[in-house]
Image (cartoon, rainbow, N blue to C red):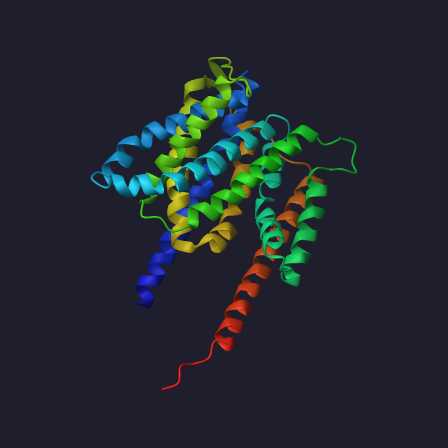
Length: 322
């Protein structure tokens, strides 16, 4: 039994790490396209539509004969697609167009703090003291990341787009870990499909510009066809990343998955350096460490609060009398 649990956790950990590495490539390759004249909306739509088509045959195969299950899971998957796919990616790519990749991703990772604040507002129950300390650290780290006291004024529009991405990230961890009868590949495929439909409708209404740029982009100092960057975004940074991320979240749970998910920032900074020769400044790197430290403390506080709640429940429920 113990050995099976270890394999279960090991599989989840491996899936999450690979998912984070795959997701970490999205910012650099998307920014290469954006700098070549592609609008963020067009890049996101191409990415999630392509990924949905890649996963379509697998989705149809695993749900064959289970159409009732598919229909019952549709609202859950549609909400995931609109929030965790379309909103998160659009917000992140719009932020990437206005600030360095690492900085945009650090703003997005405030999503974990947003979940805590949302639960606090709904339940009227104050978070654990460690959680409050973590929130303060995260906000201080964000101020350093945005260099609000330095020479460069942070791009307010970019920050707002980053906060939209943070909201989408929060939705990803909450919704991906929620039990569903759909296998991970089917849930990812359905979520990507609904996200693509939602974004296409927004683009058709003219709310988000959808413009295709140059046929070549600069990647790691070399000119490559734009379709190469798009293929990477579709196959690696979307289809593979989402399937592995959902699989990892189901094996680890939302709390542990979000801890492991912090490694995406490290992967993103590494790939931004390799692909774009882009690195945050020293103050921003320091702020990133403080911000990520704050997120870790938030998670530790939430874990301790959950354990305390469980102990109180065990104490208060009387044992049955024989």
